[in-house]
Amino acid sequence: MKFFLFLMFGFALNLHAQTLVPFDDQHWLINAREAIRDTLAGKNCIRLNNGTMLLKDTSFLNGTIDFDIALSASRYFPGIGFRMKDAANGEVYYVRPHQSGNPDAMQYYPEFNGSGGWQLYYGQGFNQARVLPVRRWIHIQMLVKGNQAEVYIDGEQEPALFISSLKRTPSAGAIGLLNEDPVAAWYANFSYQKTDNVQFRTVAPPVAGLAKGMITSWLISSPFDEKRISGKYHLNTSDFSGLSWKNLQADERGIADLSQLAGAVAGKNTVIAKLEIHSDKAQLKRLSLGFSDRMKVFFNQQLIYSAEDDFLSRDYRFLGTIGLYDAVYLPLKKGSNEVWIAVSEDIGGWGLMAKLDDTSGATEP
Image (cartoon, rainbow, N blue to C red; front, side, top):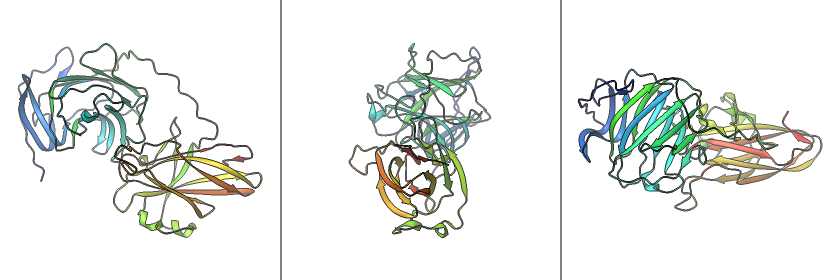
């Protein structure tokens, strides 16, 4: 059972336009198993686990966020949310103490409808290697403006992480301290400044164009239970009765984040993604695919392929990150052909990407 502890620390406010926020129930909505006053390495702080602390009455769009954090030597994911619309939608930055020194020691991802999509958002602009000491104070400063952000560690001159593309549409929202795991993280000296006068040290690289043949637009069904298509080798339109449909665009990497339309929950963890391919003759074409977590491919209503990429499903190090690692060969007939892809999700990101490797004589209408 969760309980709430509201604590008063006597910090002064307003230092050079930076608002230093005391950890008390006047300023924070605390929803946690533990959020208690503590002292660590000479600093008054709050020890947080199994919950969140949401800064009250603050609408943050652009500016700076500063805080100190100290970590336990455990596998967990403490961090911060910003531009939060609610508990299920916002921008998220966190660290992985158990991955200290590894390429994914820190992580940014956008949260849509409760889906933390780290399997979709990885690599440059999302992850960065960093040694993360435990039970020592680490100062983190975030600079946020428009669709970009920089993260600085311990006052260093160069950013530890440059987020070249915040994936949510820029919109003011709340700030929250996040630690949903039953392991302690300590926070101290939290402050923020709302300003459009943010200067980045990093210049965003030019966005590379998508490779020819990448699928950029999908027709996506409303979610349904994965069991609805279990054991089925053939589908027809009656199998989709009661479902609604929306268009979804892929991002600049070619990845369609399905959680932008709905979150995956028990009993509603699967969608159908529709693609139509027009061929000028009968021919065989390779369609490369990436997905998270499970996929079934129906071509002209017939099941032709299935695959699973769940977290840890192959070995204890398997992350299940998305990429064009699978492929099917489509026996296109002359005229219109339909590809229906059922994508099911458990944790880590609900996504799909596809590329028609040779587009000669075969196009999307």
